[in-house]
Amino acid sequence: MTVAPILPWPLLAAVGLGAIAFTVWSLRPWTLATQRRSPQRRSPRKVRPALNRCVVVVLLLLAALRPGWAGGHAQTSTAELDVFFVVDTSTSMGAEDYNGAATRLSGVQRDVMAIAQELAGAKFSLITFDDKATVRMPLSQDATALQTSMATLQPQNPRYAKGSSVTGAGQLLKERLVAAREQHPGRPALVLYAGDGENTSAAAPSPMDGSIVAGGAVLGYGTEAGGRMKDYSRNTTAYVKDRNQSGGQDAISRIDEQQLRSIAEELNVPYAHRTAKEPVSDMLGKAQPGTLSASTEDAPGRIELYWLLALAALALAIPEPLRHLRALRAVRSSAPKERKG
Image 1: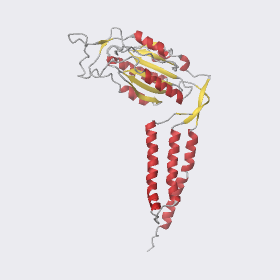
Image 2: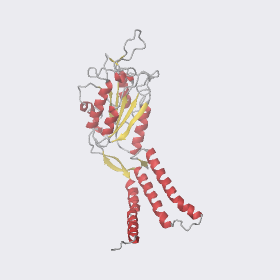
Image 3: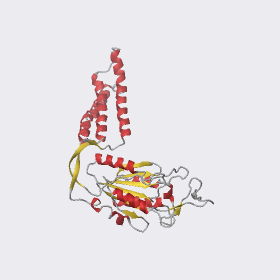
Image 4: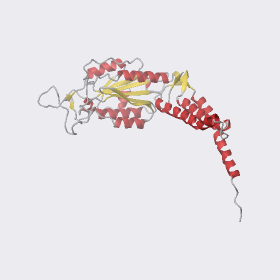
């Protein structure tokens, strides 16, 4: 059996613990009264609703985990894809050699949103890396959240740059791919890697695992002539200086297409050099076309069990409004009637 939670684990755990704690707190006066043999102790009839509400919350939380197991069949299509964007945010992605004097990262932002529009209905995840890898957005169909995440990306501040590996996100990507496959067996996973191939880490890039990648592409940004990078740690007009050159010359970053092609081979996907002239549809047409169109072949499906838990919670919750209605009627009937003058 597998689970596919609709909310983050910490949030579900916090709600569950909160519901249990509230139930214990609400029952505490009845417990103390019982121990003291107080005539005002609560009867089991008054305790039962509190326990009932706690059970309903727990059932809903279990339903939110979306338990299920592999089984059945489903047809894959563009809406049945997990798309992982792996974006280089190292300082070199601020080089101004994309479509004239725009930054490379601006080109990535443009392409990512165009790809998301082409693959509308898919689930998207955003992983970024510089000297460390970070999941900026877990798998979600919320294209607006993806747009917000991309719009806020900035190249790493050169003051904090410690050297980055072009495959620095490899291990984190593998973990997310494995988790997605366990939650949704048979659902294709596309990886779209975007970077300039410039490796500034002292260590050689570790290989990336493409064994569970169904398709995608490696997207390269930058030019052989290279471009300068703004030094945002100082002001908006200064540029990063070349530490290996005397005289305070501006550093130049150049695309390393050989490195990018090596990554593409490891992931078993094509490589495409990106400029502002080619539409993303041309690139996507080469990114394993079989995974980008509706398939007439059945793929392994998943039998969902969350509805059983939700149905049980509904059955337990139905008496609750009826109980409040009876209590309201009892209050009204016991209230003194006004005398007519």
